[in-house]
View 1 (cartoon, one colour):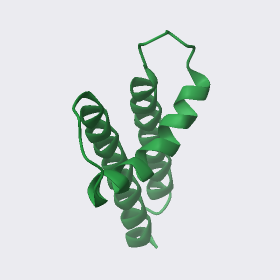
View 2 (tube, rainbow, N blue to C red):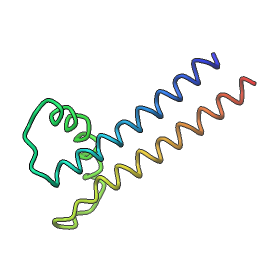
View 3 (cartoon, rainbow, N blue to C red):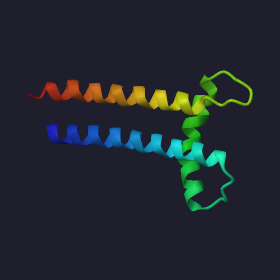
View 4 (cartoon, helix red, strand yellow):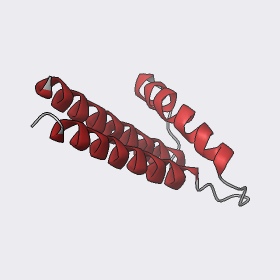
Length: 94
């Protein structure tokens, strides 16, 4: 059971890290003209649901979009919460 919890912790943290990296790539791609291809479509399909949720939370600042920063902070908080939860669960097995 302990190995399963460790696997789930590592998997979920790595998944959230990957989502953050994809959001960062999408933000960089938004600054440059990029043709639509499979990678751009894949990256947007992962990042846009998270960014839409962040846009609902953030106020409108005109041309400045701070939703990627809010998404980064939110994912970071979720990552920290998951890590702490699994540390508590793993300490109960020792």
